[in-house]
Length: 566
Image 1: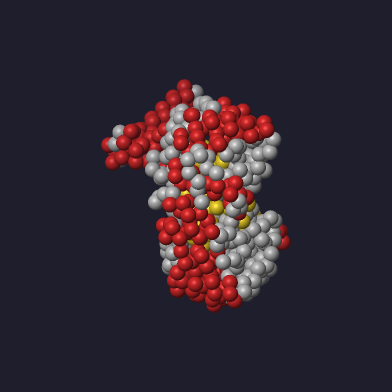
Image 2: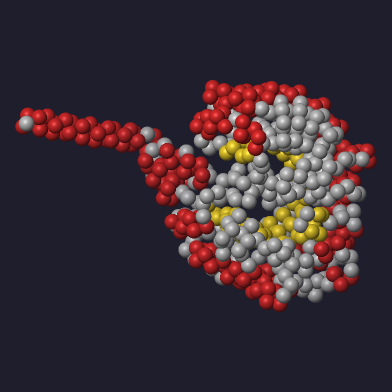
């Protein structure tokens, strides 16, 4: 027995010594790394340029030291994943868990994006903001529990060095009717101009009395981006904004008064200057590159009107982004003649009905495409083969392209004027495409798939909803060349895609892997391919397979996740 116990002791001692020696070897190996020569502060300066999500999911796995630095001193942002559903961007994480994480990393946290949190209220956020001394960027979007009073409450605890504030939560679209809400709005704006004079980006969906704008502009004259939604602001307020914010790069204003030419709307806030259509153009700052002037949340004001023509004639050549939702009018002609340096142009509309371009409309868009050779992001209400052909010939830098309306649910406009010829011409000329939506193109076939696979090697998002001629063979053609670039693939309402096509996709993933993050298929295909999809999930745990709906809405380039982030 004694001999056996001695053997056990020797075995345990040898095992403990071997484990300690292996642990020492790990530590020695880490210390021998060339990065061990750098002090923690120096290494932090290098790593802080990487996104927080990448730091925690990849960099932290390198070694123990890097994990310690990443988890304790490099959590700078708390943002939802890029490809989560629009209505629930945080997934299973609750409001309490997110705010608790914010408090845990209060010593380093710089950015918080609170999107789509149904139970978040002003009191909880107020308590959290009080514990975040380094907060620079705060976004609260689509949180229905927020009220006008909550806006005023959290503004009192925002840090003075805050540079970004985005509050877009209220359903009334900027219309404040009762006296108490107007008073709360004015208190909120007054608190901002006293405590947050370092603001560079401001987005609000409310505004009280027009007189509050003058004080805000004088206090926050360093604004670079301004987004306001209020039916109390008119053209003279646009003039005041231009005159006060000399470094303004981006302006978005939604107000019904932009469609008004009444004299009563030309009285300035500070009573020192009247801004009419002529003098307005003289106040536009040289830094302005992005413009979005809407009369409602989904419709641009008429750019062919007198203020619009004067504005574009004076500074249209310096604009790089122009958002102009709405159906065809002479605005398209004004834009193509006066804004020839645009990189982003949004002419899409909120009408999900089938829209067929007339010959005149097609000709105007063709001339527009021929003129705007620097385009990178383009959205049209519809398209034809001729338009796609001209895009391929004149816009080699095109990166994101949509050509359909948008609306609720699964309403889908047909695009019967687009065939393989147009898609192939687009692919041959626009080889830098990252995002392409072919929704409703019921005439495109495997020929288009071959062109995209051969020419567009950087394609990340491909939406094929309603492409009724897209087959299993077309999917098989895409994967060998795009399997490691595609992140989002929408195959909804493609009746010729079967379980055989998904099995071919599974075989490719088993052999080569994939970068795919989201795969959207019909409910029927999901039910008939459960085994193939289960194997895919085992091979690619991060793959989100969505049935019946892709759950990522397209509502234009402006403030539309993930299209405005890519």
